[in-house]
Image (cartoon, rainbow, N blue to C red):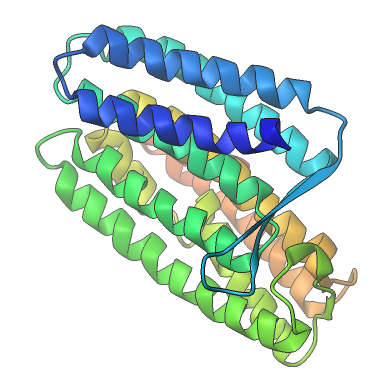
Amino acid sequence: ASLLAAIIILPFISGALILALGERRRVINQLLALGTSVVALVLSCALAGREMTLALPYFGFDWDMSFRLYHFSSFIVIASCAFAALIALYSTVFMKDRERSGQFFGYFTLTLGLVNGAVLADHLILLLFFWEGLLVTLFAMIAIGNPDGYKAATKAFIIVGLSDLCMMIGIALTSMLAHTMVISDVSLPSTGLGSVAFICLAIGAASKAGSMPFHSWIPDAAINAHLPFMAILPAALEKLLGIYFLARIALDMFALTPGSWLSTLLMVVGGATIILAVLMALIQKNYKRLLSFHAISQVG
């Protein structure tokens, strides 16, 4: 259980320390980010194949901060830590002489902790906490890029934020129907209000992954944000997290039957995302926008 908590807490401590050190300790910031991601990868590999839960009480509430590790979440955590370690290694060279590198590495490390927390969370409110934290680091990492980064960051914040509002509605409906907020205990039919809850949650998951029609901020961010940002968030961690949660919704939380209209809807959205994003990539003349549309296509 201590290793499980360390995977989440260690990046938070490291990220806060990097932000506190500022821009004057660039080498220390780089080493902290790289070391944290490597240690998190080692810890996640050490937990591979295990199943465990961790419950910590909320202060002043009857809920528990529930975390759950099992084969699926373990795979996603290992993948996210592996991507983070590789991108941290690349970023130590790419961000060496660039402005605001300390902020970048601080937000980068916090993002890793937020993703691991969201993947391991077994409580809807706890999941929402980490989920919305990623919206903050998303905005910050785009904004510290080019001078026009704030415009792209604001666009991303609005699009992802609106989809997160749908997800909040889905969480409220799910908890009302299931009489629990523990994700592993939710088992609902995908009919009636259950289908509304499913769609609201799926919108949040699809938007986080960068699926159409919630994709338009990604090409703009590719132009304005630092290059490693595109590798760490839209192309890797957010894609992993969004697809992971969508799988949990469709396979565990709701009874999604083959041939149902919800199943067909998911296939249509997936197919459209694959085809339309590739068609958009064909007409791009900027390689960053081209790669961003291919990243969107892979979500499908």
